[in-house]
Length: 121
Image (cartoon, rainbow, N blue to C red; front, side, top):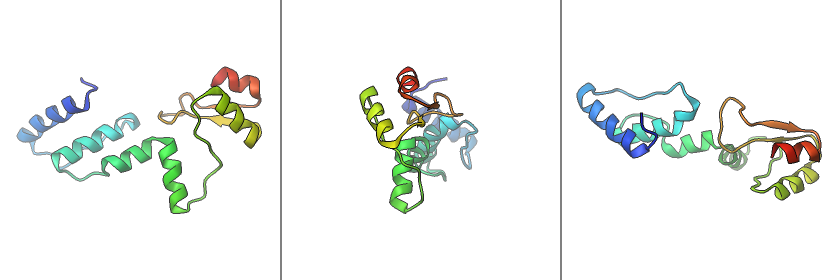
């Protein structure tokens, strides 16, 4: 029931001591990083925390794709509305606004103009 990774790992270690897990998995996109950390702490197979972070964080994922030469759409990491407006001006509307972390397209918006961008950002 905790959201603290150290507490989750401690609980998993206690449970693993009695059950001897072969692995840990999740069906929750939001739990990918925690499950990777737990698998590492238990010495079980997994994707690793770095890969989990890269797969869950849209900005890190884009950087990894870019580094590997995979085709990606234009993007810009912004932290302020002014930066978002500047990026939109550079790209042209419509633009897509996405949080770096999220799941199920929550808080992902198409903005057709500056008014929508201001409202959504």
